[in-house]
Image 1 (cartoon, helix red, strand yellow):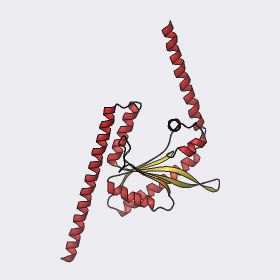
Image 2 (spheres, helix red, strand yellow):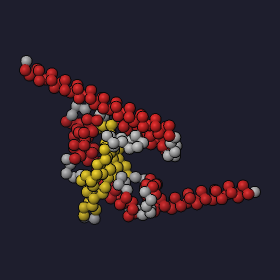
Image 3 (tube, one colour):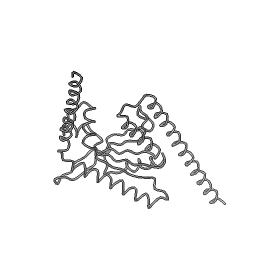
Image 4 (cartoon, one colour):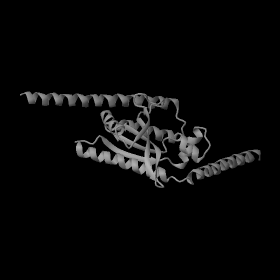
Length: 234
């Protein structure tokens, strides 16, 4: 009988937690996301236009694909709780810097440098922070280049700036990040230490492969330039 009461109490506690989580998520869901939706659309269209221009001017477009998103309410709640902030609109605006995000996936490391150059020289994008997780990966092995930027949008006949995060990475880095995310989700964040070590090791291998391929591409490019110069002198 005592065991049944304990099990019942456990169920009630879980049910209370579930209802509380639903109520907290509703707080976020009631917030207007219009300005974030406008910022996402504007940033996505800008990168899409850059990709179209590169397709027209280059034999091979350095951008493989683009993906954008607005962080979901349950993920916003998790992020604020992780940062130990109260679930409010003000805290969401001031403490979550990747609420709007866009990911640019390129083929090679040299392609990343080209896209970075374009973003750095775009007067409509105000860069407020750079994080080089390629040369300085996160402890779990994550590699990518991040920009935190301000996107100007027009609301109520005035210009507002919305923060967004731009991630630029290679196909290989993106594959690793996707698999790591799925493993983390499947294990509910409780990844065994051995698996963590394996993921870091794979990340290091991927970095070596990325750099080796890029080196070969540069060597071939230099060889072609030398051949062209020789032809001119003949």
